[in-house]
Amino acid sequence: MTNSPGWTENRQLDELPHHQALLHGTAWASIATVYGTGEALPTVLTRILDPDPVVRVTAVDDAFRAVNDQNTVYEATVPVALYMAAILGHPAITAGEAVPDADKPPHRSTLVRLLQGLSDTAYDADDERVARGERHRGKVFLDAYPELRAFREARPAIFSAVRPLLDHDSAAVRDAALLAAIPLAEHPDLSRYRGELIGHARNLLANSPDNYYREPVLEAMKAWGQDLSGLENADDVTARELRARQLAEHCSVWPGHGKNDHVEDPQS
Image (cartoon, rainbow, N blue to C red):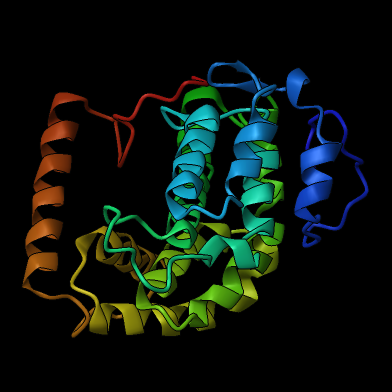
């Protein structure tokens, strides 16, 4: 599934390995991260299952910082993302989070933070990122960027772990799962889930005021050809008009540049 040492090449696209197989079957010291190699990653990833939720969420942040920087996908990004996906249903992920401890500062949900990290990585590898790369480098872009291609090939496996959380009891988890599912579902094999995602998107837009989620969900609905009438609120319209003005100003300064072309591509 990936080009990382220690992996076979004949896995099914939607097969998500067990987290222990990922932890012990990946040659971490031989694959690249933001800081060098992934030699320290097994220790960090193991801490994500710690009984202490503060330790867990700190480990999630540390792991994602090691494999995500300036929209770049590294060799270690795929096994880390697969590990994160494989533990989404692990009972340790929500241990100690049902009732906050009054003696400790508030902590973020480990499950939500995992989904947010997967979402950020999926957007770094989405179709728009590829289109931007091909505008700069031509159709050879993905051939010259095997790490990005490997993550895109792993999207069905990651989606298989994210999808059940779209119906989670917690609205925060449902919203974070939807934000992760949208870019993952760009994979051709996942197009059959679009109707399901549209239903979840409508539910989010009807109930959540959080622009962190609303903006990308509205963008997805627009890309899917959905009528946004009645889905946008006043803040959505103001934000959309502001983005349009900023894009127009950017294009007037940099003629020929389109949406997001101002974002520097590390592989350009």
